[in-house]
Length: 392
Image 1 (tube, rainbow, N blue to C red):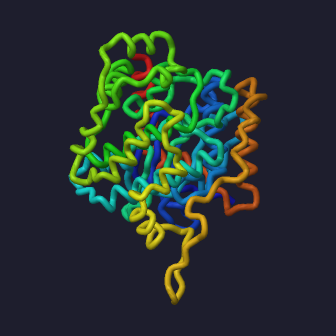
Image 2 (cartoon, rainbow, N blue to C red; image 1 turned 180 degrees about the vertical axis):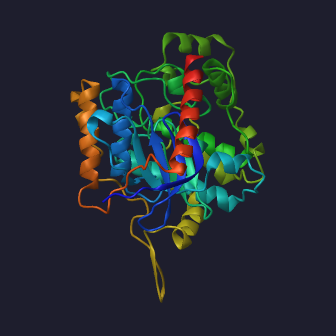
Image 3 (cartoon, one colour; image 1 turned 180 degrees about the horizontal axis):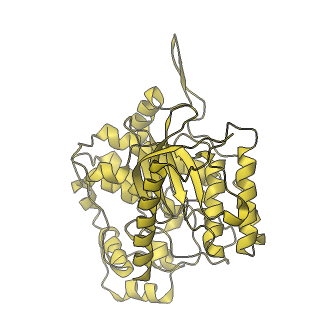
């Protein structure tokens, strides 16, 4: 027996899919349905989708989005798209920042605490997100936040001689080591992105907003000053020459105090620990969570927002570890043996069926329903729009 989720309205569009708010007919709950279309067009694309799917099913943390269910796939010959059900979140941090809604110091602290808490979990699982930005931080009406969109995520690469792609992270949130062409990078790139978002929460505007990667790098050095030569060790020759040929710039960190009235000494101190040009000296998610600025955010979150603590008649019982680690680490070794689109297609098909084994009545799409036809029209329009954008 299979039942059909009823699409309601679109709530998000991304590079790798469309998300709708739907009703789960099994219990009447409101959930989010993400459609991943044209998954098996080429090997790079289907490997990326398989990785994201495995991560969504692996992650179990209050501040990281995870899969609640995956819709029943058709026979493998007709298998071209994947539908994933996740928890429904009403908005994202980008929409909050650009809205007229006031953001108090308490809001900023509790948001930042949750971002770092989720990021510490991902990093402890050996995963780099590689696209932390406000639009990938979902929030609900209770200010609970979850990191989402693992389309660019990957397992850490311990071998520094192995080259990693530089086509990651939305430009405004891209760390200087990537802007300078570093062939290898790690967890600090995600921390840089969080620092940019922290400044954006304080000032309600993008901190480093430019038209090109070179201009982006110039904006960073305008604020942080010309970096020491040691911080340029992984830069490509062109980027190193660009920075060193200009006149020496002193740091202008006093600008950070002018972001807003919420930019207190403690806030700027933590921000400066995140926005460090040299990734080796950038603060970790674990250490950032221990910063005094976040004490109130931690207390507020664990007093009334989290699921890891619980209440009894005598008061609130707190867990011993507010930021649990993922153990064991996420295993990405399976990717080494993926050599063809058909091979990945078979593995994804089998993986979805295994995830559904022994669970609730499986869901599938009813292509005859009026709601689904509306859903398809909207996703087709978005896919066409994205294709034209890529052609340009």
